[in-house]
Amino acid sequence: MSYFEECIWIFTGLIAGSFVNTCIDRLPLQFADEELRLRLLKSSKLSPHLKKLLKDSKIKLHKPTRSFCFYCGHQLKWFENIPMLSYILIKGHCRVCKTPLVPRLFWTETMHCFCYGIFGWFFQNWIWSLFASINFSFLWILAYCRSHQQIRIKLFFYGGVLLVVNSLVYFFIGK
Ligand SMILES: [Zn+2]
Image 1 (tube, protein in one colour):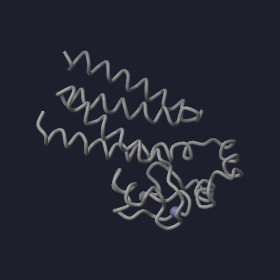
Image 2 (cartoon, rainbow, N blue to C red):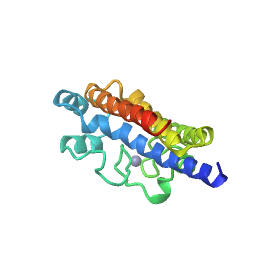
Image 3 (tube, protein in one colour):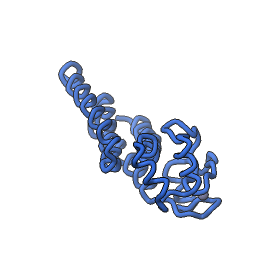
């Protein structure tokens, strides 16, 4: 594998890590049932901004399109959205309200960058590297969302589908 291909895997890992963070942040809110929604709306863990989005059902995986601070709602500029690097540059705090960001944002991107790079180098075959990477990201999301009943059911379903696709690729393409 050339250095160029290895760089592509590392870059893909960074983008995937950023997307996985969005999934972990937003899916539990998007798929919260009525009971959980009411509990979250009363809890002090969510900021007033997030409560408003949740109340109006305005938080989804694809909505709002741009990333924002979960505390004050500040929409992130492009330079605050660079995987790994931005977290270091803004010192793990929102630039506007100074609220500390969860370290998971950084570790998810770092681990994705590292593991996608390892998979690309180890398998020397883009199909296996791709499937190893997808499985890794899926398990990462599952690990963080496992305590949310509604998402766990959906993830188990998609996990089953992924398992079937993995097996089909192994039997029909891998040999
Ligand atoms: Zn903020």
